[in-house]
Length: 257
Image 1 (spheres, helix red, strand yellow):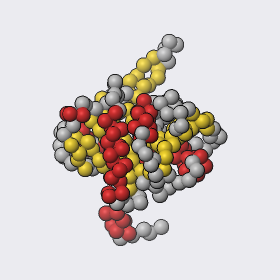
Image 2: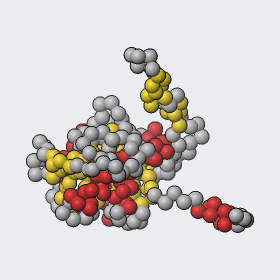
Image 3: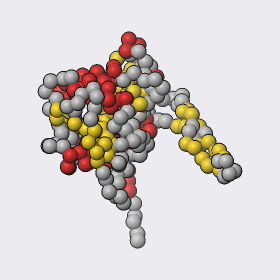
């Protein structure tokens, strides 16, 4: 089984290193890493069009036989380039992660991690995005083991070709995790999204920050609630953004132009 691993934290990030080390210990897996040469978080599904993409072979201390490339582009660039040029053949699975910090609710629209998995899905490859919902001093080992568990069981899930799985693992001790919940996307709102500051010359600049505002009426089937209650969240996502409920209503409108 050929597996492509990518991320948006950069090829030298701890999450992708722990994941690749965990998977490379399994027999029967052909592992390739293709990831950005530096952090490209919150790049969404951006692709590079106005400058050339460059790749560089990367060696890994934990596994010198592992093949990897760093790319001076976005996570979506990495998947496209890997599938269309770098790998010896089409991968059987794309795993994006393990991301440092969660990708929950409407934040998936900004996520480079999720977008890399979406790109895999667009190219007809089963794909999953994996995130650990802890930013400071994360331990990726349990999330990596869960990704391996999911890999072994993916065939039984019979995913549609246009669907990926967005996995969020609570950033707590494994013994505190209560189980798995199949979830929908919740809602994420931020208070004071920008901080206004001044540079040494007295000019204003703005730094994206913000505090998450908890939604009081969020239901138990939302991914944000699953994580809050120490459950692993698995949300099936697809990239068709069409509002099908509105199509017929719009068709009945008198479009007199």
